[in-house]
Length: 632
Image 1: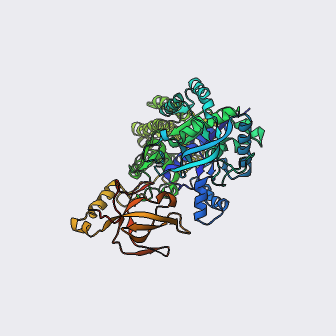
Image 2 (image 1 turned 90 degrees about the horizontal axis):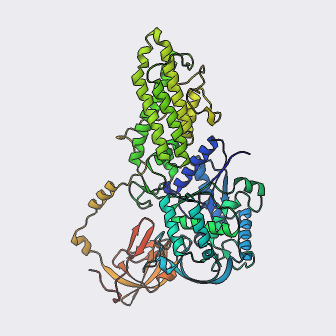
Image 3 (image 1 turned 90 degrees about the vertical axis):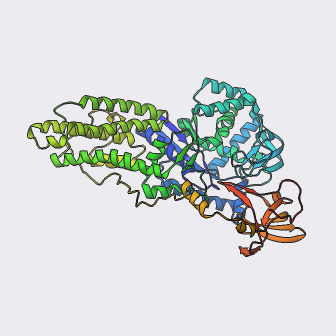
């Protein structure tokens, strides 16, 4: 029976905008899948899209589209993204797929039949953006979502509930018996603290909208989007419709997820599996978030960049190398374009590129074919020892998902390869016929080092490794070909073009243009005087009516009371605030702003709001004050 390996990413919410931060999980999972295939595992790599829920329905309605048509369009973005990033997933699951819907209903029915799902009434807070329920003990006084920091909606509706509390002790027992079930360890400890406080039953259905999987025995309910989404890990590999495939790959070897959804994956999902009497996944790895150039990823900062733009500028191999070399997987990390360029020039162009080109050029100049070793000399034992040790450490670190250490060790070998050239001075031996045999050995040893490096790098630098092996006339024919002196001699080699041309930083135009320094310059240029400020007439206004503007997802039309005067403005806050949540609020507006039209509707003034990344808050006054009061 062949070895199997099942790796997943969370399915991506179709309402989210793909950027380098959100793509990070899938890029890493792709590296692991390629590594396991290289190791001879029958590997199944799953990703997909999460397409149900209130947020998707609201967005579809704003776009005046059927939610399924809307989902089809947005899901395609992720299919195209993974294709553009050369992701090697074996399947792409959509929560609107028929087989998935049937599996979700099977879960819900069986858990209900077991008594683990019961009818009740939910009253509490809900984040439409994250599709997450929150209790008062989770929240501060401002009642905003702890994850996305958007205002929450107070919800009262009949729901079905999952007896999550029933599985507190079984989960604690599992965590104790499987200390590596959740990694890194500080993420595991977070989950254990939640378990020690005791789990509460959770709502697993909604009745206020109908865009979701219908509850099989009560179709006025739809299954809660997170319950629905988690089931994808088993639905995609055949649970309920292909028993042979399911038994082959389940339990999953690793779920790669972002830290913000750790609670769902490490507590709720295992409890659901326990209820279904199914094996739990072997590992859940919750990694940290990426910032870009030291700042939160945000469209307004110009750093929420489509990773395909980075790949177009720098190449997929270079981007992956940088992500895995510079950012310790599991922790929060910063994506710096400047550091990416440094890695390309120093590591890829100078260290690896020069080693390969120097070696292949000397072979081409001195031999018709790749030579064989024949005369062992100084430094060869040191090179052999380092190669063997590097391969051993490579397996260890890759199996631990410690990509930074794996690459650091490989680069020690690459650097020693360049040092080995300087120590042996093959260019001098080339002019002495008596040293031809020794020259052949040195160049063979260098070729062997490069071949081993290329194989170890192949899950990460996919095209580069393949290019190196082809130019050397070598093929990867199983992991047993990794090792000292397994290079096939006597084959024709090709020098080829430089692997990574150096980037001239003085002439190069970076992709991510907004940096902290540039932000500071903008702030300095934008300084205003007290006279400039005096030109603004800022006043308090009360929102008396609010409604969405057709064909716009974010624009709201607001009718304001300003000291008895009725005034209309248009505000781009519809993605964060619902019209109902704004009624009665006292806000601050620019009263004397020149009127303008937005989507054909006149706006006579502007409300003030603060924005940080995806968070947006309208500015209000502290306590009661008459409308029309001036801000001074």
